[in-house]
Image (cartoon, rainbow, N blue to C red; front, side, top):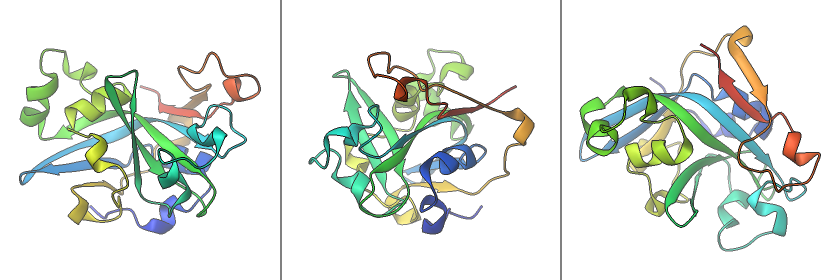
Length: 191
């Protein structure tokens, strides 16, 4: 499969969130390939988006969001979980797509070492779960998702059929005011 080029990530973040459905997240650990098909995403768009981490402007945590598209923004949340985002859009405009869920494909034995106490359909069905399954931590923050040398990248895959793509409000932002709380910027593939 072909690694997604930087131009893919340079598109508008809401479009990119939808277009990432069906693409394949890949992590290489000690020569072992782990991969999964992306099946749920969320878009976060600029300082005006009050659900976006960049709402308070550029900080050491969000600096990567202002950088070139195609880099990983990995953040720690709730004092226990890592979450992976792909930086998108134009440089100096903070935007990223949160990878919310994937369907594991390659490296199932390795993934099972971290998530095997759960049924396979629960291995990567949340942003923290997929990071745990793929051993993604703050060490991967800022890496180039457009290079296999980074050990973490996204490969091209078939576009999801438009009739199978659903959208709705983003998850876990109940304290965010409207209209941002209800923006239909979460995308997932229906069964």
